[in-house]
Length: 154
Image (tube, rainbow, N blue to C red; front, side, top):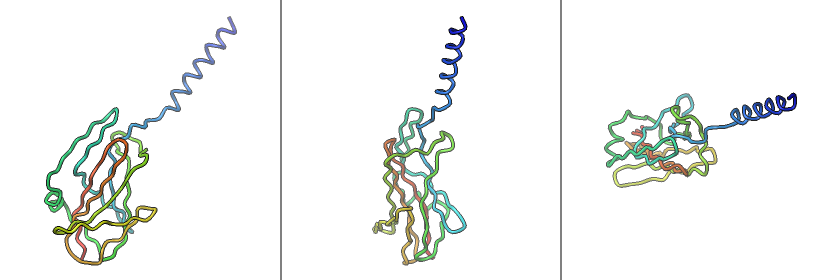
């Protein structure tokens, strides 16, 4: 009987441990942020196609230039450096994005300027003043998300 009780306690302990080490890898749509020296600005979600076991988000914006122009202005200096960061979705939790592909563009009139990142996702705004739409694309195995911002280089 003593062996049976010890075996039962051992199994119960093993089951408790396996429950403690389980993690939630089912992540939601991340949020995108521009980080400046002393501030951070969250970009606005535009087109989203994201599907995981716990979440299915589909959002479509037909005219991102028009949509972005209705957003609050993000004022930057010519040639200003910033970094792009993605944070976990607070609703779902987790920030595991394997093999994420990130690209960013500035749109002005019919021009599309690709922004080059360094290893830390830092980039520099152009020196030409004016109004731009910042478009950021994030793709992972769970889907894709597009973010926009109304950037004024002054």
